[in-house]
Image (cartoon, rainbow, N blue to C red; front, side, top):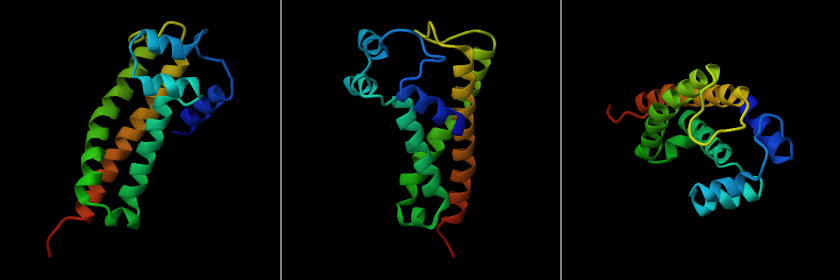
Length: 143
């Protein structure tokens, strides 16, 4: 997640390398994005970066002792869902970016942005799978 976090921080501080020209918040609004996503973009918060932070917090809960104080299903359900969704999403993004394909309204994005994002989400998804399995085994009810 470090390269992804560095890229998103760079953009939040005004960097433009790899980003398309124009107002992304206006593009999101024109494409029907939820108001909260548009608001976040206008204020320098990328919704995918916020989601990645939530995923990293979930990972921390799955592997630390304080995570055992949280109901088991409250960690395992999002952990397994995240693993099942993020791993193939990340792999698909890497493949698409590597071959010059984009998804949706991605005109102007540099291909390396897809690779960085794809690696981050593949890694996060795989880590969620491994950590969810470990937490599931560690907190299994029984003798």
